[in-house]
Length: 83
Image (cartoon, rainbow, N blue to C red; front, side):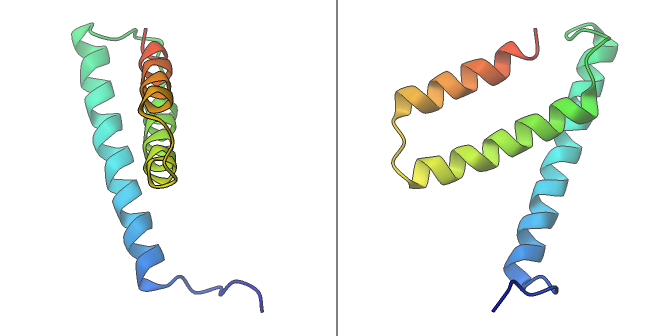
């Protein structure tokens, strides 16, 4: 049978958690833009989504025993987006 059209409690919890993470990241990125820590041209919403999505993916990859070196490389790549 296909996937349910009604999210389970776990799906709702994950969605809420990722939404809160994205919101917190977007807020922090916006403050950093205003203070000059980050470029004023940076899209705070898109960057927050990218970071939150990467973090979620890294959690999955960590559970799949991805190497620490590969995870660190991923973090470095995401940080480079902020320059």
